[in-house]
Image 1 (tube, helix red, strand yellow):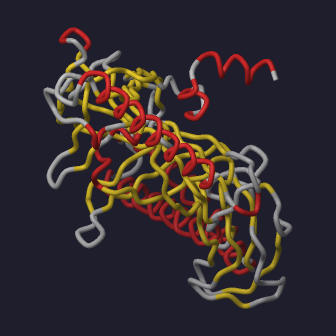
Image 2: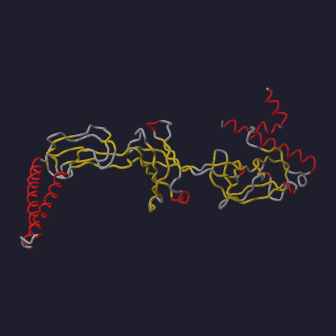
Image 3: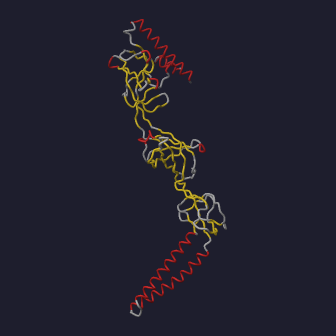
Amino acid sequence: MLQRLSSAVVLAIVVIAAAGVAAQENGGLEDAPTPVVVAPVRSEQVVDRVEALGTTRANESVTITANVTEKIAEIHFQDGQHVAKGDVLVVLDKAEEDAELQAALAILDEKRLAYERSLQLEKRQFTATAQLDERRAALREAEARITALEARVDDRVIRAPFSGVIGLRTVSVGTLVEPGDVITTLDDLSVIKLDFSVPSAYLRALAPGLGVVATSAPFGDQRFEGEVEGIDTRIDPVTRSIVVRAMLPNPNSLLKPGLLMTVELLKDPRQAMFIPEEALIPRRASNQVLVVDEAAENTVVSRDVTIGVRRPGRVEIVDGLREGDKVITRGTLQVRPGQRVSILAVDEGDTPLPQLLRGPEAAAGDGAS
């Protein structure tokens, strides 16, 4: 491919040089227009892409641990099982707490009956108000005792805090666990969070709802689509980047937490102007192009331009040109601003340069062959 490209460039130089010599012989260097190849400024639809590396996280994730020191009495899940919010996962030994609760319930019944009797007697003025207040306080104390015991019993029943997938269990029935000991993990994988860093230069382009496409080596060319959910409030002072979080639907639970993914941010399509890259003349502090002003008898005009994104062989022009302007792509070294030129060929981008320079007859002949 490089050999073909080099041949095309050499051919362009030879043709332009030959045309220049012919023009000099016919009318002199001062009067003869210099032949050049031009290309029109074209408007194209562009989808801006920002590429980054990110790491997946579960939508919700928690480590299931014990709250108290006790032996495990029951296990109600299997490794990798889907569970719903509130499902019982593990029951710790709570025989003592159950017995205390039953005794406290019996005492509560006694206190309630005593209070109700005193209430009836007080209505008929057969008992003192002080005795009624005493029995009311005793009833409330018994109710508080029940609440405390129910909390102790509930501490020994471990439930799923949200719907998700259980990880691998690390305990068995009879295992003595202490507060903080890991029993298993629970992850909500219905949606995957994808966190990635983007250079702060792209900050203006970031917004919730922006589309993303992610890929990962284990899944080959499979693409996972989602959108930006949120943007961090701080820029890293060292890397000058900001963390962006995207959400990827994961109905089949293919994606797992901790996966490395390549992310492409996709902005809404926009119209942009492009020119061939070879028309660009880099300067120390700017970029320039040479434009053929057809309204001024094909006079060369130098324009400072602001460039945007680059594509293979093309560059976006943000400012400095208009659609339809003709920029010089071949012959820029032979001309200067204010000089008249002749357009040897117009490169529309769909015809190889050697064929273009040979003229339409040659192109027709190549097509027929």
